[in-house]
Image: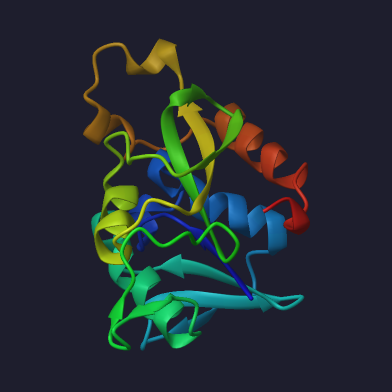
Amino acid sequence: MKIIIGLGNPGNQYERTRHNAGWIFLDNLIGADNWLTNKKFNALIKEVNGLIFVKPLTFMNESGQSVQKILNYYGLRSKNLGIFSKKDEDLNDCLTVIQDDLDLNIGVCKIATDSGSAGHRGIASIIKYLKTQKFKRLRLGIKNDLLRTHIPAEKFVLQPFGKDELESIKNTASNYRVSDL
């Protein structure tokens, strides 16, 4: 089984923002309709071809809470002493996280495995809750040097995409196949 997480923030005010690139990517990859709210996971869930797609509703900085609950529910974590999840466990085969990345230009994607958060608070939360950084990430570029010059990162990521930028994110998603994740 494989879990694919798209990071973002719930609420209409965040819908088209740079921090919601993970949600936007998923909506364009598998469709924006028929997401089910799962209160146990505090997430929107959609199953397609045996894969579980997830949009955590915990807000970006607490994404790890939702991700941990989902992985535990589906039994995708090894246990130490039969109780506690194993530290530094390799989850590359069962977990992919789609994140916005301020270091990459709009529409550029890179795959990362076993790397730190690089200051991304959603990724930091997942690492904290899972006790490992060994999971696959699709780093989706949101950088725009013309707009970012004097705006702090924490404010820039909450700004909405311009029309052309949003189109670039959607095109990037449409060029991916679910099997690529």
